[in-house]
Amino acid sequence: GSTIISFLEESENYTDFAYVCSKVKLSKKSESNIAQLLSTRGNYTVFAPTNEALHAYLDSIYVTRDSDITQIPDSTAEYIVRNAIIDNGNNDAYLTTDFLVGALGKTNMNDRYITISYDNDSVTSKAITVVNEHSRIVNPDVKVTNGVVHGVDNVVQMSNAYLPDLIEQTPNLKIFSMLLR
Image 1 (tube, rainbow, N blue to C red):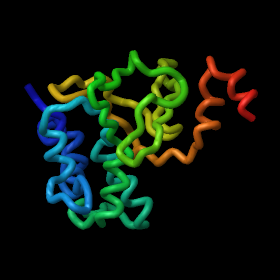
Image 2 (image 1 turned 45 degrees about the vertical axis):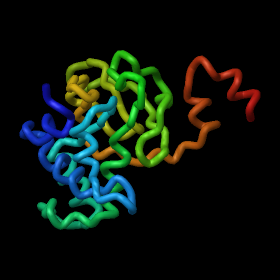
Image 3 (image 1 turned 135 degrees about the vertical axis):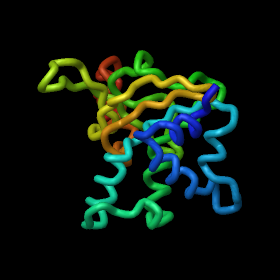
Image 4 (image 1 turned 45 degrees about the horizontal axis):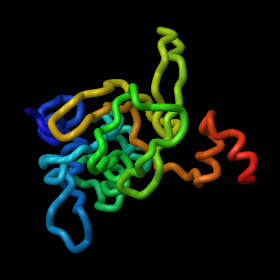
């Protein structure tokens, strides 16, 4: 079956994100990149921005029009990729049915918690899953051999929430949050 990286490369909506993954090294000491990691066994949850979302993000931060994806700086590529991927280790990758309002149990590759919330689509009145208050899931639960890909309409921004703030956002921990404060 398809791996995460083969799905991204073969899908017309996520090829640019696949390219950006190939630019990001696993670590400063490694020659391997994230794309190679996403082509191997594992359980990864990926919030992949669409090509359109990736270009809109690059255009906004570089104040240009039609940014060339091949000219993306390494630091920007790292920010985009590491915020979008969760290594679930031995646990299953997250499906949308696993999401609760608040922070997910595992951190992303930047060691930050990803938060989930819900909103209503103003046109269709359907519930929409929102990642880190900014990115809406537009293509949920694409199961591949090494995880799950969720297509998002914006690059996943880094969460600046601290643990007490994340606890406060979780409905079943309101009393604990109050006691913690």
